[in-house]
Image (cartoon, rainbow, N blue to C red):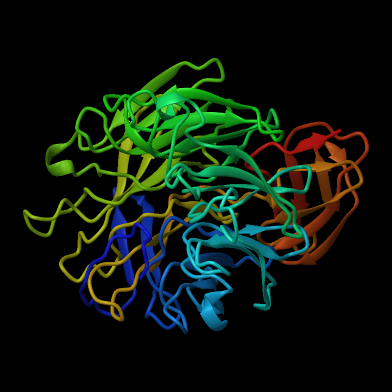
Length: 486
């Protein structure tokens, strides 16, 4: 029996592609594919990532050969290839139900977690090669369960080469609180912190989502429960395990946060599933000094047409605005359904715009329904996302979509940090014929490996700043700063 916290709906939708204009001629929504069950089903919290080959990679929580989830590749035009179907080994020792995003290292391998499966059916950490060879690096809760169990958050790679992550529960008497852990790429795991270590779980408990590595070298994350009012927390933890609660939600300012990001201005931004003025979630900002403010309360428009109950974290676009999805709100098919989700934009100042309302075309919901995952901006400037799907599967098992906002292409380092002399993978489009790569203006040696992939060496005089790649068509700049490590 699967115990993961998914939406469960039944229905069938049509199989044709969907393209519809929204808001203005500069914005176009396109459904790229619809999962059919065999190639995956029900993508949940995991946003897509872009690989050096220009394709996107993600996970589905169900579907695949064994209906236990899959890792898939999708081209920008919508062709899906299944890289791995979980539960392919006896007893599902390879894992079952991947919920979150993948992490790709410079060697091209993918790393992630499964919510269930493994030696004790309590979840795993896995490594997957680009050709689909899977290695289980760690099975949770095989003995004392001090390492935690049931991770539904993905992994974060740190400059020390270690992975950091969180579990949603711990074993023994503390069965619901969760952990933060560090793990080597060989699978050696160390528990850094166990939640509810303070009286009344003031430090947070349960439902910890993925960690964000900030520019100061520390990690920031959230818990879905615990805190002063049992509504969740925002916390900071150092790589050594020094822990501090930064904010406890009180329901009026949000409840059950789903992650934080650090924006280019240094502040943390995120969204909550519930709480706020309308108990439909909020978007918030937290400064490094600890000043918290709500930027937007969902369901502030009639019939929640602006969206409600976001499950996904925010992402910062190359234009400096934030983008995200809500699982509910938008267009309601009947009075008993609170909409089927939205895509939205919000400025750092709090100006909110709904960009797309799912199922606006009618009951077939051919564009998708109930997005739980966040958005990813490809280096072509477009946004890519996933929906969980509505009703029967096979039929409507979820979708992958593209949202074009007219933003310019850019380049992106696969990891936005590195040491002098180390190789960095730089992703982009139309990179053939590249004549120059610079780090904060300092020329670097490089090799063009494909039309979407350049590998460069961090130069000795480089400072923190933008990467620029000069091609025959012009110069492309990175959307974020690259940090040169000592």
